[in-house]
Image (cartoon, rainbow, N blue to C red; front, side, top):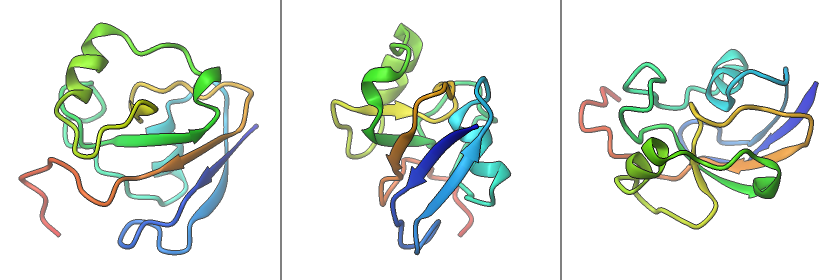
Length: 111
């Protein structure tokens, strides 16, 4: 199991969280499995940027983003050099610390 630390987010995870994830699952799947309702408007198919996260620790251990993910990231709010789409990050054996940005580009959000 891999340790994932989620930094506090006002709406989605106010207290922050520490979760365990199975290597091989996506970061988005791991967050959702632990009740952290990260937005994922395209059903995790890399067709939007609503699951944008900033990897604060462990970024260098991740497989590089492919061209499609890079194109989608260009649309994300608050893009940083260590930004990734949670639906495209495959959890490995190394711990991660992630921040869910305050805003997303999801214009169809119902909350």
